[in-house]
Length: 401
Image 1 (cartoon, rainbow, N blue to C red):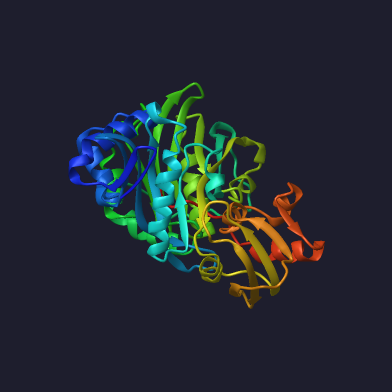
Image 2 (tube, one colour; image 1 turned 90 degrees about the vertical axis):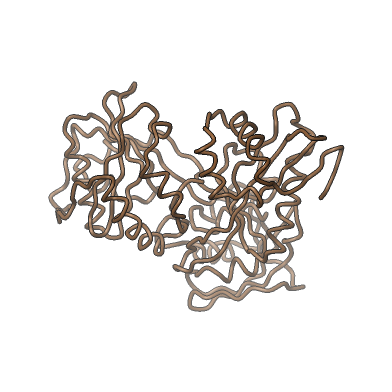
């Protein structure tokens, strides 16, 4: 399909399965068996991969699929999701990643998709391709032994202990209701739910099998671990559509008395600390990017989401990798955006990676401006843009891919 420096690109086929599995296992430090790899290929089909070969030797790959993503305002849009991006350790620093990404982005542009997303294993690489971290997660540890809920915290009940076989039927519809109202969440394929509820030992990291708590408006999936922190309740997912469901699920998790600590990842604006008499018990032990995004078509992406406040501004977007940048007139009325290329002088200048980071509402314009990564004619334009991109809730990744 394309070649550079002796590297040839082509789409994958079923015959490439073993070679792709070997490469990705090597690069990501995992050991997946063929049956598990087949499930991965069901989510990211081999025919949609881009494979880089030197002769008949596989030295790089990237996988892609369409996903349905919820954006601020509750609209669901089709985006390109990338995964299994790998270059053999024998072939680093030869431009193979750039060559694969050039072809991948050409395909995405041809499909007319406004956004590309992926979960990044490294944080230093992808800014040069126009990506920014668009969802942030806080890893927290709660000392369950001393957790007490405030008298004002709702105690609605409604949580049931549910066998995993039953949870496999009741949880997916709850998740689908939750993802429709949550920016950053995606439609979850059936094969991914199968992976969750089959609960293979390779997913347990030495912990117990999976347990489920189900509320009419939420659920928690968790397992028990013993590690350096002692006895731990590891909450893999807690999704709640309402404040009552959120409080009821956390009250139930905190009532698992034989375990000392609870560990999980929550959104920065999760109200859990404010439910407790001592908010210090919710220790943030890590902060990391959860999802990265790149705008492939600036007008299409910006008009897909809603905004706060009215705005009339020209934004200059620098794209160092493709040709999605330029100057755009952005007009917002009643939360609805109009955006089109313009020859007018810009009021605000920023990189397309910064725009990707801002897109779902996890970051503030003013923070990037303070870091010298957004430039504006005056402070009023910054304040107006900051207010416009602010969202009612922080984005949350629906499922890891």
